Image (cartoon, rainbow, N blue to C red; front, side, top):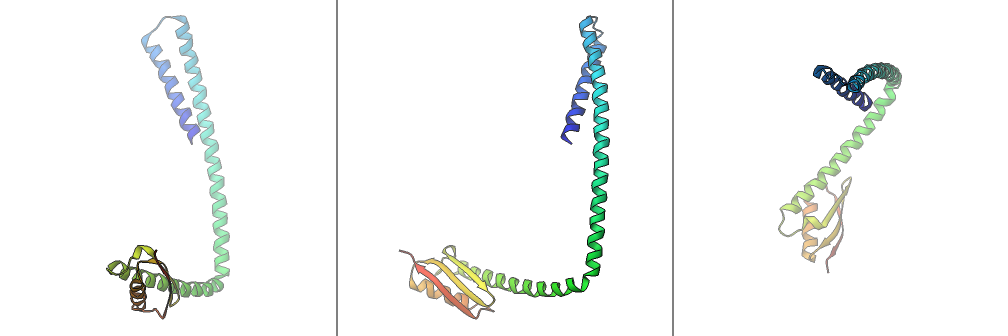
Length: 169
């Protein structure tokens, strides 16, 4: 596409230069000759741009045909494998619900930490796997560890909290 743009710009510039010299009616033979060369050059450039555009158009059509063929193949495979896809889909949906639940639990715990004046949410990492929560990071004191654990346990869906929290020195 850049080649076409450069060619078009060059053609327009060359054509404009040729027109200016023609319009000015300059009688200098070398300038007239240069103007004629510019005209010839712009015609040649215009033809080259046209050919290049046609080549790109044909190439685009070929690519489009390949994409259509691929889409037809995929469509057929999906129709034939619909039952398999359906069963895989159920597994994926169940896992997605589980992951969403894990993310929701983590987000709720972090929200509680953010609201709490006793816990520094910036230094605690929360990891949730199913209904198990792991706290890691650093805190100021033992009371902050206890508060972090209690806040995590207060979130619906949390069954167990493992603390790997360390007191900052």
